[in-house]
Structure formats: C-alpha cells, structure tokens
Image (cartoon, rainbow, N blue to C red; front, side, top):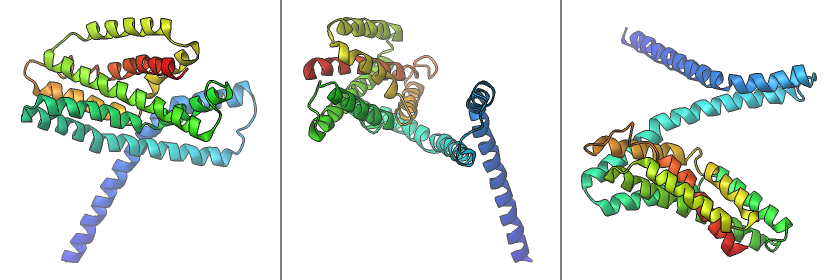
Amino acid sequence: MQQTEHILISRRIWIILAQKFILKLRSAFMDLVPIIGVVAFFQLVVIQKPFPNLGEVLIGTLFVVIGLMLFIEGLTIGLFPIGESLAHALAHKGSMFWLLLFAFFLGFSTTIAEPALIAIAQEAAKISADASLIENTVESRSSYALGLRISVALSVGLSILIGVIRIIKGWPIYYLIVGGYIMVMVVTWFAPPEIIGLAYDAGGVTTSTITVPLVTALGVGLASIIQGRSPLLDGFGLIAFASLMPMIFVMMYGMIIF
C-alpha cells in the first residue's frame, strides 16, 4: 500500500515538473516568435525560396528556445538572488570600503568575462592589424584585445562604484548621466577617428548576459535596504553608467595605442 502511494506521489511530482517545463518552454518560444516570424516572412515571401538546410534550422531553433528558457530560469534562481543577498549583507556590515570594493570588482569581473566583449575585442584586434594600426602578429593582436577588455572592465567597475555612491548619497541620476555624456563628447573631439566607432559600440557590448543581472540585483538590493531609498527610483540606473564609461575609457585607450 505504501509503495503504491509512493509511486503515485512520484508520478504527480513528475507530472507537475513536466507541466512547469512545458509552460516555461512555451514562454521562451513565444519570446522568439517575432524573430521567427520576421525571418520566415522575408525568406518565404520576399526572397521566395525555401529555407536551406531546414532540418538544421529547426534543430537550431529548438536549441535556442531551450537555451533561452534555461538562461532565464538561471537568472531567476541564481544570479538575481545572490546579487541582492550580497548587497544586503554588505550594507548590514556597515563598511563603505568593502561595499565599494565589491561594487568595483563586480563590475570588473563580470565585464572581463562578457562573451560579447571578448568577441568584439578579438574582431577589433584583427581589423586594426589588417589596417596596419598595430603589428599583424599573434602577440600584438592578443595584447591589443586584452588591453581593450581590461580598459572596458576598469571603466565598468568604476561606473558601478560611482553608481553605488549615487544610491547611498541619493544624488539625482540625470546629473551624472548628462555630465558623463558631456565628457563623452569632449573626449570624442580629441580621440583618433579609428577608435570612436569601437568605443561607442563598447558601451553596448558591456551590458550583456552576465553583467546586467548581477549589477541590476546589486542596485535594487542596495536601494531596498537603505533607509529613504526607493528600489524603483534609486535601484535602477547602474546599467546606464556601465554603458557610458566604456566609451570614455576606450577612446582614451585609443589615444595611447594609436
């Protein structure tokens, strides 16, 4: 009798898990429906040709849906809670030094590991070598790409640190954003033309899959625990700094390299 009940309970658990899995998979698929619709429309209606390697396209789409579902679930279960819990613990500790040090190294470490930044740094090194801006050797390209990644990571670490100070002090965000973009325009005037486009792109690639969830969780968690701060008004805005500062740092890096 007990064995039968145990089997029934196990079946119910598996059914519930399967239902949740299907719902989350369906949600991820619905997020991709606009992209699939646009690609299918232009391929079948405008170009009027069938998809090449349709089987591989369908399998790849399935992998993308599953990967997106797992990624979103990972953010919900892991990265967001740990970011908020660390912010709470450091704020309770009452040490400004450790909080600011954590903010800097969080921005630095998440940025240096960004896949998008790694890819664009390698591509920028290749293009710069082809344009004879740097030596066309493996060592030179690797050094250039690494220097680019470090300069961006330092800028993001500094921007997160400034953003945390803003939350603690309650400074209006638009003062810092407007002032920052004035600095961007001033540095752009003096920067080599070869680095300007890359610098502006660097502001976008830094705010990607790894940086955004942890930094957002840090800001929201910190604003929710500091008295007089609103998670909605003060908790967001760190990503704006993470997009702004790399433009300045990469252009300064270009002034040194070129």
